[in-house]
Image 1: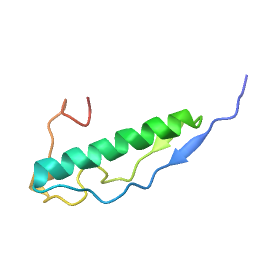
Image 2: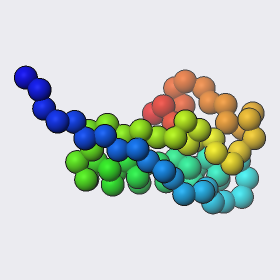
Image 3: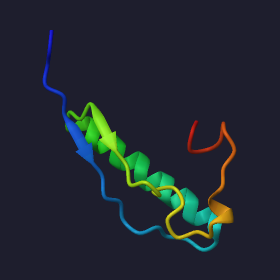
Image 4: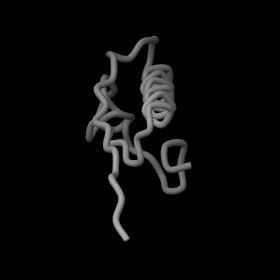
Length: 72
């Protein structure tokens, strides 16, 4: 049995805050809010930008262990 699947592609605003930790938190907060909105609009699958959680931070500051804040 088949059914239509709604897919949403998200574009997030630039991060805010000072310092890598604040910027990463801002990125995650923006992503979570956009995912909630997309789900509310009926999206079954939501696609995030590939570097959504590390946009605006240094390479090393973007590393995360698994499990970590983003994977949780």
